[in-house]
Amino acid sequence: MIDTYTALDLETTGLHPKQDRIIEIGAVKVEGGRQIASFQSLIYPGRKLTEQVCALTGIQDSMLEDAPEAEEIIPRLLEFIGGDVLVGHRILFDFAFVKRAAVNQKLHFEKEGIDTLKLSRKFLPQLESRRLSCLCKHFGFSHQAHRALGDAQAASTLYLKLKELFGEENEKDFSPRSLHWQIKKETPVTKSQKERLYKLLDKHRITIDEEIQKLTRNEADRIIDRILATYGR
Image (cartoon, rainbow, N blue to C red; front, side, top):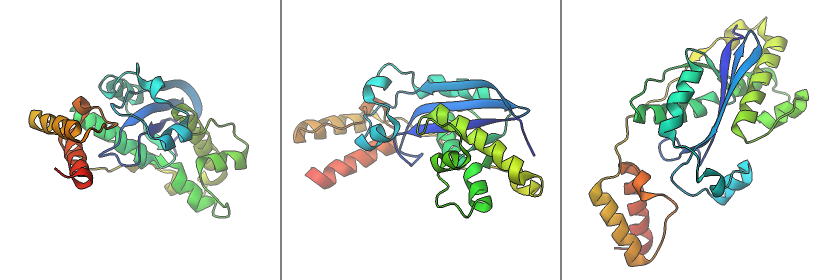
């Protein structure tokens, strides 16, 4: 069983790595069961946040206006993580978003991870909920919910507690496993797509939350299809 790792958590614009963006990263590096360093940054996503995301995280568009972009932060995050195993609550979600951002920068990111949500579901079936906030309340941990660094710290504390309670007799469950998420490098929006989008927006006198210059080709296609379905040509 490991006691040296990086616990990772993200806040994002939505739930889908192929179309949503990271807005905050939090990570804590743990050695020998003790936190030795932390990493935190807001990230400008190139689009406006939904009311639901703002309400959940407390992050507002104004907080992201001057934040660095993923292209600046992701290399620093990968350097911080180094060769560590990842720990997190539903860690594949966070891994997938980071891998997408890394692949888009032609950076290598393959990892093993330990999922505290899976561990909680197996070893705490009697609890009504295995949400991170509920588990922290159950064990009496302090927790800044739905902010990346607070959730990363909570996932780390939860992992160590679960390992203490159940790890000795269930070593296999607490062993890292390879994280898999297949994604290809995405190409940026083309000149013709941008021109078509601007024409459609002008013709129908509408605005979109996304920043057109920051779109990928697939994202631009989805927006164009959405406008055509709603407003016609």
